[in-house]
Image: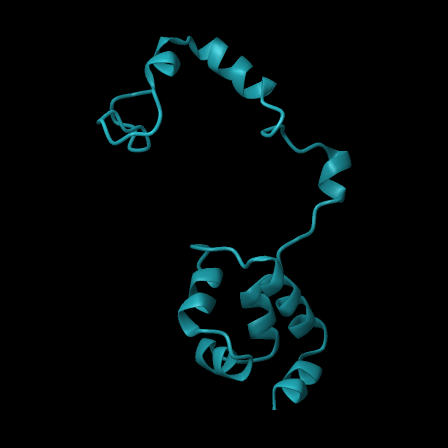
Length: 114
């Protein structure tokens, strides 16, 4: 890692021992990453099985609502909605399901919440 990399912590507070990583060549680092069973690249086969995260901004704009109106109408904290839209955070599984229902049948959600 370069000395300008902000993700590597070399102080005593780091929970990782970077000495082994620093001793590896770039080729060995790539090989180690490729051998990690939890970090395999997506293939055409397994990408078809993934579920897309509902695009909050697209749903909100389709309903012609401001962020404030959407947040109030569907009882989502405004800060959370902004985090989702700006990509700072992703909705968890329950929120993704809720957003999917809002996207498909917003009137039913509004009726259920009233």
